Structures are given as structure tokens and as C-alpha cells.
Image (cartoon, rainbow, N blue to C red; front, side, top):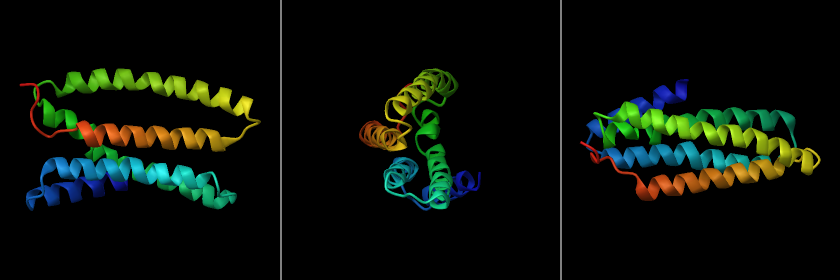
Amino acid sequence: FFTVIIAGFVTDFAVHRGVRLIIMRKLNQTIGMMVPAVLFGLLCIIHNQSASVAFMIAISGFATFGTSGAIASPLDISPRFSGIIVGISNTAGTIPGIVGVLSTGYILAATNNNWTVVFIITAGIQVIGWLCFTIMATADIVIE
């Protein structure tokens, strides 16, 4: 909760100081996806329960920076139709949520409850998503 507020304030402050909006969107998305990707990778080598819990909490906190990144982008590219875009993307985003839970169960069953495979796949998906956003994102109006 607090990291969402911090990211929003920092983004607004920077934009009002002259930083281009797309730079802030991509910076927030980088923090929101790459820091968790690194932490998921580190979870594969950490064998301390307390540290693992702390890493999972940190992952949840850093992931919220995406609220000021990709999640806010529909307002940039189409203010008039942003609600429709968010509705479509949230609907499409539900499918990986369902498939991910199912896949995790299969992976854990096949690997004798080895979370390392799950964390590596998750980190990889984070990196791919970050690359896609970084390459394709714009803050310019695309749909009038």
C-alpha cells in the first residue's frame, strides 16, 4: 500500500519537474518487474525461512511500482477509452492467473515440491514482460 503511494508521489513530482512521463512509466515498471525478478532468482539460493518471507514481502512491495507504470498507461494512450482497455486487459490477465496456479501445482508435483523451478519461471516471465513494456510502451495518445 505504501509503495503505491510513494511511487505515485515520486512520479508526479518528477513529471511536474520536467521528466517525460514515459521515462517515469518505464522506470516504475523496471522497479516493479526487475527487482522482483532478481528477488525471485535469489529465492532459489536462499534457504533461510525468515529471509524467504522477507523476500516475498519485498517482492509484493516492489511489484506495486507497476501501478505507476503499465497499469496507468491506458490513461496515457487513450483517455477516452481507458476503461475499456483496462477491462479487456484485466480479462486477458485473468487467464495467466488461472493457468499459473494450475501449472505451479503440476510443476511442484513433478519436482517433489521444488519451488526453484517455479521461481525461475516467474522471474523469466517478469523479464519478458519488462522487455515488452520497455520496447513498446508509449505515453502518446494512440486512440482518440
